[in-house]
Length: 244
Image 1: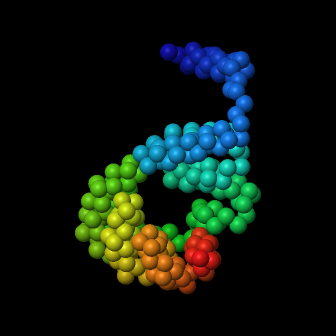
Image 2: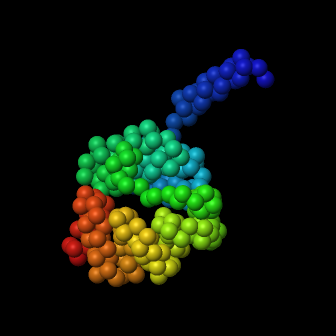
Image 3: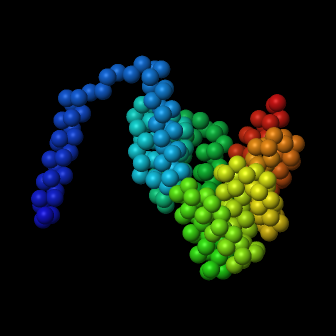
């Protein structure tokens, strides 16, 4: 098919889509029905994210925003997805929309810092073999193949025993599988390798909290804040715990 025919076909499809929108309007949803629909779409978006299907994730979150243009969860998750796939400009737009709706949102504040390069990201290894295994582990993790991800993270660590980020992400994988003791062990190793990184303390706190060890959770959140007093997401978690 030549270029002109392709353009014509696209034009006809657009006209067809427009006609469908005009002639087949969706029935008006009640507020309760709308809320149920939004919840379902967010669950579907989460499923596609766990499968590594970011195209469908974006589609589902966009459908949420058609129903509720100020839905913070949708904007925040779109920011995360766009950031993950490398569309930083669009990621920033979504995070800024969250901050317009809720200027004190801790997740959006932290993500904005990362996107603008103000937050310290986790260091990479200079060992090419370690990075090869690490990249494969990340691929498996994005696809929800956590056991395979664990194996590749372990290979990365074997290739570079000082690779703090591999320990950190291995801990995340165990956390995803609800293996909190294993997660705690890996986060602790990450801290040994890179004691000035705030993130292992943050996630170690999360793991202890998942085991209902509030005292240890608070202890590690406080250590994260000693490194970065403006670590807003941890500030919010700590404040929430101290209210109880």
